Length: 371
Image 1: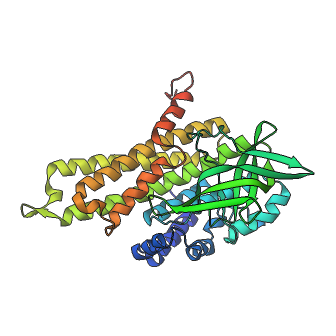
Image 2: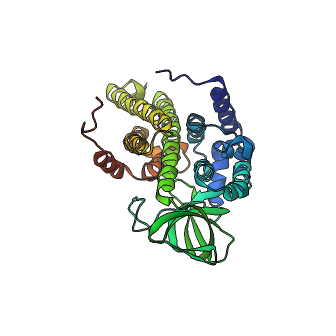
Image 3: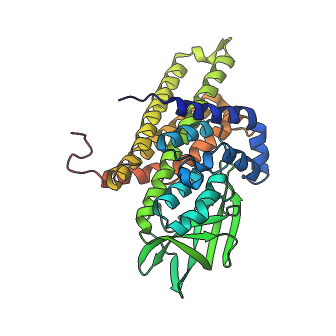
């Protein structure tokens, strides 16, 4: 199988990498964390690069690209541990263009693609335990208009977003709605997460809503799979940079008059980390290539990928800290922030144990062995 990237994909990678190197250094990121974990100006710069419109069709002002381009972008943003939720723009673009009616598409796609509107997925509930079919939020219809009542947790940049994609029960079945943050009955309480990004608890109390699709669970599963593929690619980028930082430190730090990189036991540790790095990369490729597969095949593939990425992110992050010693957990050192990013990504869209359960539950007659 040919895994070479096209010229357009390499140019896209180069453009994002140059932006990260020139415009998003460690000090700018730390300033964004101190300011609350989200910077609208930075999000606007990413939109100017076309990244927020990556999955939006060209006839709606987007770039009309696919999962491989999304993977390339998220890898580079992962290398820079960029705080702004570009993955949410990919989810919103994919879901609204794939499931929304013409009225929803015409009202929102162009604004999502241009960065004018930040639309984020608000699906996590406290009792859900990563289950997508566990939904207590309720939607009611009166006089042709919908309203949503419920509470969603860990909503990315929830108190800064312009609108939310919200799954809610309508007539006993999960449907997907778009709710504007400025609408009546919406309350968002924001906070900074472990990795420095911003999230919020969002409460909807009879909030006016626009129906995106009645088949909400199907759309939600697709949205989460887009998010998982983005997280996998972002994790690969963060792992790559973590490995580079660790190797640089080991070649610089001396003990007994020699670089610690010369110690056989530590070299073996780096070799184990390298194996996890490459396993993560291959499964990220697998996840992105399966995003357009039929739903059952896609769900199995994304669960496998997220399980392997979870293992790799935890292993590389924790071993990097151990090889660094005390400096590996100091706030002043950039490596500690990669560790925190990898730790949070491992929990995003389902942790490793959850996805191990998903892989097990989705095994068929072959017990997961390819014929």
